[in-house]
Length: 211
Image (cartoon, rainbow, N blue to C red; front, side, top):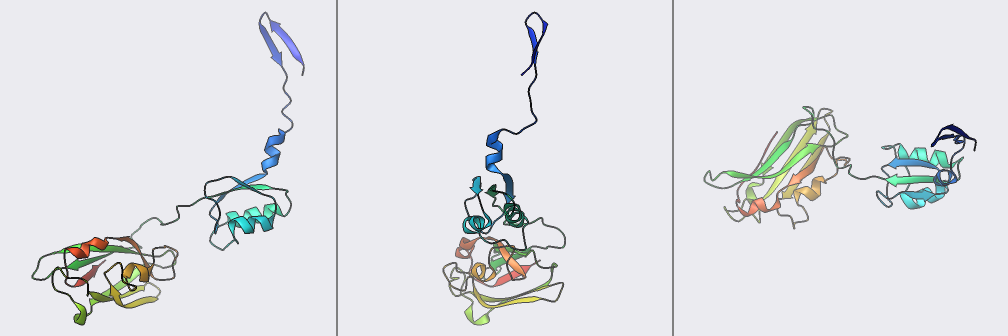
């Protein structure tokens, strides 16, 4: 490149920046976003749409990154994909009330929180919740192994998720967290965002719910 003397100890040198270094071209376009599967937070080079589907799964209607990467690979030799995680929630607002579930003891001994339920992403907000303990399955205070309850949640579009015979015991196949699920993208009206499984060790009466 041309070099010009300005003064003693001072020179100017022209650098040609009209082309990209070869290393940049080798990684292709970069795409960062959620995918169905694949290594998380690791830049991964893929060289075809089929390779993308093999490593990161098929695209879905929830996220744009997989669609953009596949479209890019139709005309490009390679792309760098970074899968991200941490999609387990969404901002809380007055349209997304929290349902607080509690288990109470006999003889007004108080209650402890059993868990929290919030609406899923696909619902328009919960308008009503009905929660009743099965009278035939209430255990004595301190003995909660037989407590079962029914749960009915309705949203603003009159879509209802109903559950019967839910259990407060984590090891039970009908444990309420297993029934509702723990994903905000689930098909139910609400999902379990927080659970305190050991709270039933202190009380063994009726299950209650408030919004």
